[in-house]
Length: 221
Length: 185
Image (cartoon, rainbow over all chains, first blue to last red; front, side):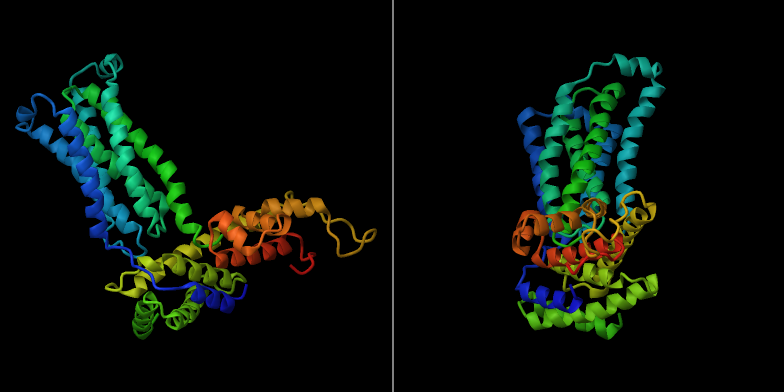
């Protein structure tokens, strides 16, 4: 097909269109849903019994803030990346990753500092309730975020999908952390960190095909 | 892209957004020129510059709703153009490596018995199998499935323009893989 014919073809197909909403608007919409979902879940299931005491502890607050901030930054970075040429601050995605890595590392350090790390980790019963909550909240908010990304034009689908998966799982981890009464780092690693890592990986693998195909199918191969 | 071209592009894009097809066609003509220069500057005189240009035009068309008229046009456009150029380079390398490996495409049947224009069916099937997935699907549906461009577009979730471009590119790759022995598409 000659380029001149393609131009005629594309111009003929083109009609008025509605531009995609700005990133901040799309971010607010998604956060309203994701955080709203977390708040409703916490309200229905209930926060941990000693929540009033827990928020007095700097470590508890710092860990909750780390996952929350990681979720916000990752969501923003994913939405920005889905618009060609819009990314001006790559450090945002690096910061999101550092925060979630710091969160995970804190539990690992606590576990090692307590001694007998491996036996404790192996002996600690897995709490499926936490795994289920993180999974359910991640999937619900993650699906919506992936749909939002598909509607844009992600030129780097792998990075976009990974950030979207990180965003939804981080916010889900925040809500679960508020509900979970078990502070033992062995539990946090086995029932919070590992599921989060697995969900980010699964979300990236599934999401990369979905986000990439949506844009690529509008073009050619 | 000069500052004037960028301003002009942004203006045409705004008009096209409200349905002005002439402005949109003018924009695409300008982008063709800009992309060709951009690709030549980076790739030299490779024979598939037009692939980069067409891919970029299709991508601009597919992503036009993401352009924010309050932002400069250049970064938006060049992000698309460079991404498409990388995709085309990767695809060309893949096709070339299949061609060079030599064991993918059987030798065409010796001319003689049934006429010089005929090609061994195995060679054609092997060449088809060596095509990028999307090109193969489009050609199989159009040639073996007797589907129209519109039907293929609907079936594969592509635009009709993308189907035509993909088919054209697939025929050209087939010609190359079969050593230029095919009859007219």
